[in-house]
Image (tube, rainbow, N blue to C red; front, side, top):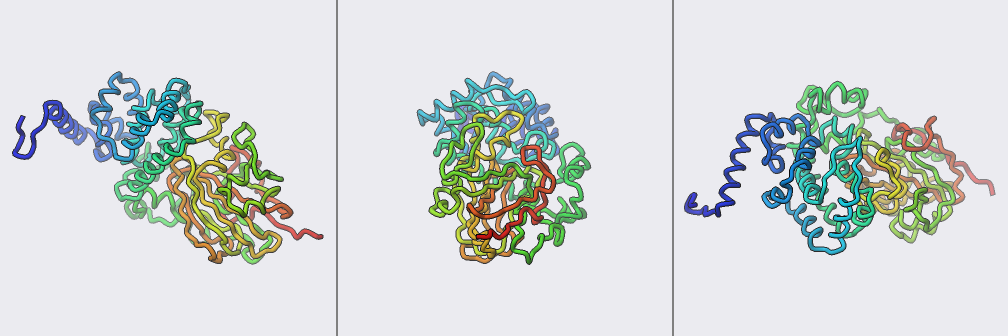
Length: 453
């Protein structure tokens, strides 16, 4: 039919156009925030749209999974180009195609987690939905970061183990996460920064999990969104001056905690190469530091690892005073985890991820000769694989000075000391493991004593 001098559509396109226009009117009538609906739930009734506006990302996914029309829907949707790239890779690369079919043939559902896609078509739709959506508070607490929650079961299959180690798959996910990051840095992402009792990041329930928020962080509760300009601005929030004082700033024998994080593991006599993928996940130094020649100095040394959750402060601070010898980013995996990890404890893969995940690597020559050259490793996990370095090589940094930040979710880090460094850790009463509590950033974390020869 002729709709205008410049618009000549085939019949199916005309029907689709009418459908989109109709649902746009429906969502305008039934949803307080129609912006987050457009692009992914328009083929459902206003009940679905209303449920999604109330924070029902996983309700939306369940309805998608329950439908028998996935293949029809997938042809009608217009994916973002970065999602289209992943779709083409899955469909045109023989090995990747096998991996993703194996994933959905073998995956087990996690009864305590969100509903999982039945096939890669539904997975792509979910990813596409996320690109123009910020995370509600309740979903973050219950499920973690959004794409990770969808990948939770696929990651734990043999096909997933192969797929998420594939360089081409990780390249696609890197582009997807960078695109999502653009949205999270936009003012449009502020819609979740409110006091809604069920979903808002400034709700009474949220503040219970982030106690002393106003007193501790730079913000203004009298301004819109507490003064934050985007979701990412909120996520990378800074402490107010004096809230996290640097322990013993003039004592170079004291090493401070570089992140607001919980101790996970301490390992001694670490090998250059080890079987990091097995259940015990021993550290493999060469891979941790991206095969840098300086790895030689750390063979037989000590590794300290700690983890952060989605509610933690996510900036990194220098553990010592000294010179930044090297600082660089290493591309890696985004959704690869140990095949031995369970549904209930995804943090079980932290040591494994130190060898494969996207990470920022710092070599710092400490002023204290008893420490000498040491390594700080910031490990991106899933959506939090955007690592930003804010200092330069050859720059002198003071203990407690900010040197970088994570973006978008939970993450991990390591400190590596050379063999012969006499380091005594102060874990503030915490036992290393997945259930440990955070130690404040810039608090005393270790003391290095002089070795008498």
